[in-house]
Length: 433
Image (spheres, rainbow, N blue to C red):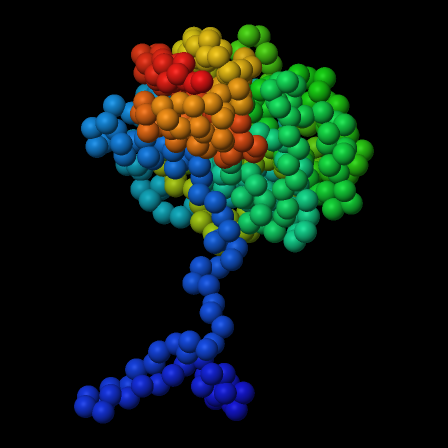
């Protein structure tokens, strides 16, 4: 040990010798500057609010409480039988008992290419595809591949709670662009332009939206895509809810309506919502080959391949029919109408009609500040806590997705539970004075 290292060692550690036992122990020097036990990078990450609410609701229900949870972002239907059967068969095949390519099984990449052409009209090649451990890893991989420290990402708000954390983890800075209920939760080009700086690297675009259920019309998708292309801004477009739209509304893939954007666009998707496969953890990203190669290199060190059995199940899902999603859509549509109607019957609550995904996002500003059972909630977080405490209904507060003043309720739960849960909220908020 050289002199400098010896000096540092003496400054950071005190040595104590036990006279009776002859044992030498080292204790930290209280005069040395404290170092955090957890890295600042990870210590700054917020817990997923949606998963936290769902976990709390499930824990209370497991304890025997009659809790109804509106927090879950997953279909309440089982995975289709033919997908499960493919997984069972795959589990018995020894070829699936070993490592496979980090970027995904070739057969699954081919299925994703075919599915993307069939459902979106977007023609891509297998070399443009990376199979990931769910949509979240696809989002993180994308930002890790695109961003350098200080790069800004325009983030339409309300946003999915994971987006800003993934951006920060990759060294970027999320720049929120808020669109309220008065504009259908859809950001405009004027708003995006006002937020653009010389550090703007990318735009996160999600349609249908989690948490609002808003769907951008074709003309607006095209206009935003052309604006991004003209300013050299990458677009990361999340299409995980592509098949869940209502009232004749269509989901439009941005690189399809703006083909020139393809070289600066990454599409994120997965089987979770369409095929009720949230627990199988299969997502993907589609983008230019250099970006996909970089993200694949990252994944090769982070997680390696997605579980082979899950990949085989995803192949069966993508090569099969969309009959299952049509059945789910019929149920979601029925529940959507019930939920929106009941929420809008509450004085002080304004719930725009969602046309995609399976969420309602009511504005509750008209309730905040009023007295409800001896309390005056000032924020949507306080209101959500009050609702859980008083009537045992779990909702996610708007703070998880952007500004306060809103709640997110998933209608991916049974019809009876939905009516009972919203009914309890109606009863509670009817007392607001």
